[in-house]
Image (cartoon, rainbow, N blue to C red; front, side):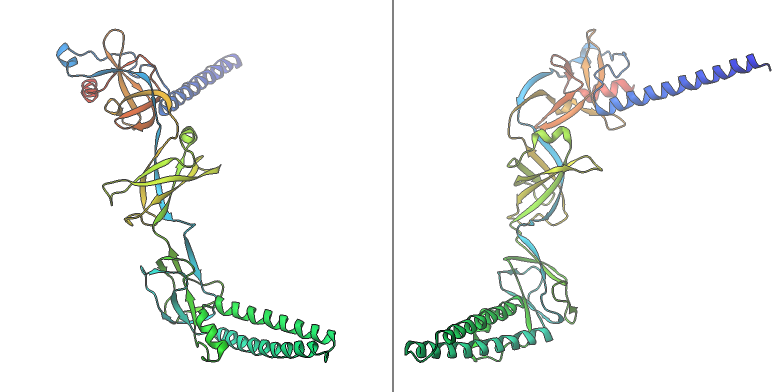
Length: 390
């Protein structure tokens, strides 16, 4: 084969490859358009579905019109404890757990005992308090005596000032040691008994509830050795409200704002639970390109549980304009893409893919694929779809 023939063959092959590549690229582009629901052309490829008069009489045909409505956004939500009304209880005492006082599910108030701990650190804190109390009493006695002596001109001013300074320092040390006991779970009445000498002091430290709520997690057992300041012992949460978190994509963000009303649907209740949007994130998730939205939901029947998946309807705050058609008119194809059947000029019916927006009662918002004035098959769309496949 000469060089001219070789060059000709190479050009032919390159042309064929380029044509095939361009065709595949165009096919992918058309497929992407259909998936976005923006192909407003006749998806049936120009072939209309013709029905007899008796068959057409079974259909309900509506005209697509622009209407005013409050947008409703449906998202999947994940339930969590209300972070403003729940907390992990971290032990401030090092040592083994001696007893669990409060069990899972118990309703507690601030200061209620949850567990007791045997700890050398605790005994040391009680001893430090006794020493600080004794030092304060001695400083108080000296300061009171010096006040009398100074009043009778029997003491120098500098000595009185020193006594007052010593008393203030002793009082500060006493308060610091008392605060240490409080941090270790010692009740005020017990601290008072130790101060008054009517009690030798508690032998064990107590882990107490920091807030009112329900004990929803118990993370320690008797005999377990805890490290003060790091071991999580319990979780206490106020279950009257819960957080429901969902993700909203860019096209729906306009319908979501702080304060928007929401309804939470769960299989545990026939009626929706009420809530309000209290946070819309300022950042978009880099992976999903969605924005996090948080709802505070009323949980008076205690049906919402942590990590439960629920369906959430978020209602917009303002009316918008858009095309609404009956939900019965919207069908799904083999790829789960929404479509409708429209009536064309010759009276036949063609399939047209659409992009759905809000679900308003028994109607859908159509964001792309239809224009005002298009006639759409409502009741009977399934019959037309069946006829098309025959």
